[in-house]
Image 1 (cartoon, rainbow, N blue to C red):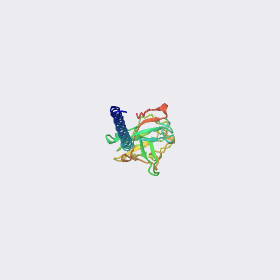
Image 2 (tube, rainbow, N blue to C red):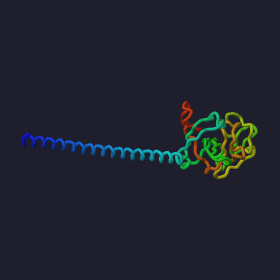
Image 3 (cartoon, helix red, strand yellow):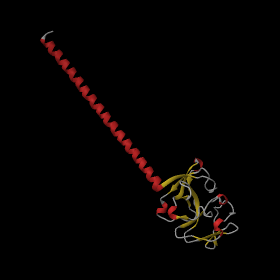
Length: 213
């Protein structure tokens, strides 16, 4: 091999080495970029999950709450097993109204909530006569929510004067409901109302907004 061939061979080897070096550097660069993209994707995913949890927390504690109807006291408006979303924000801006369906805690059992319909408002006098008619301030209340004629007026057989923040509630299934007629439930204070039944999400064939009036 003459000097020219040696120099040519050395030049080719050098070029090959340069190509390998460039390839190695390019590969390292690609690996670094992929690693950087993976880190970015991981951070983005973590941020997404954190945002979802934050929104869920805010919705559950300040805007809405999921609850399940247990029992038949609100038949036929609501049925046993219905899953509802309770609106917890409306009453921050307005007072509860007559015929609103509300959720409130049962005072004698922890983590137990009742769902009933508002009948009497603060400052009113409520009484139920022997025929099962509801009287508000001495006048018969025109309503059609009761599934049947009430057989037991309970403590509402005598006039009940509602205080400044007190509400009288009844279940729509009047003869199968523990409500304000029962001393264990009694009158409901506005500050104890969790919220207003808003949306039925189960069963699926009954999905829709709850009609209060």
